[in-house]
Length: 285
Image (cartoon, rainbow, N blue to C red):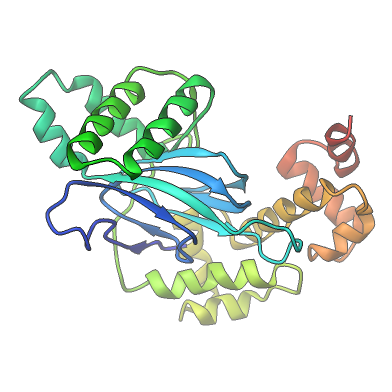
């Protein structure tokens, strides 16, 4: 799907960085020129970063490089006590930071990090703990203290190997606003209707393309077919339901939009590398 262009700092005049606490996630698959370090405080659901689709849970810490498309989708109505989404994000302009740092030290390591960040980075361990603490400290700090925390955060980011790359290669994008809204409609259509019969005709109509043109367009930009994407969304929901011990596998298969148990088992194994029953059994060992 074609991401929508956004300006992460357009409401902050000439600021080159900002810390922001938010109680909702953007509904659009979007990208911006700013870097983004985000801690998910509360909430769970699915996220799409570059070409990587996966579940997310509270306490996740991710760094998104410049130009890397992303979106978080919060699971709604999963239970009465389900927490509302809450996140804390640091945004900064990489070019402005690089220009500032170049007068202070050799920025070879910084440039290498920024290039690597275009794959998306999921942090863990003591690195995650230190960065979370700094993000919280920045919220109520003075501007000079925020600036000190920003550079302390950069020092940690440039000197750690406690991360996983989310995409196998940097995501390359040639921005176009013309298709952004249309393809995002397709994305939302799948998320809202995956348990039903997903129509290729409807997806093409939402993108204002013929079916053959839509299939070529979707494959060129996501590196997967439309049906592959639909099945990935369905299997991710199945994984969530498998984590609820009262759900039977046959019920889950039909609840996620599969018309037969053999089909469900086949696609689950091709995507997750194991059967639904084995996956479920490992969850409750």
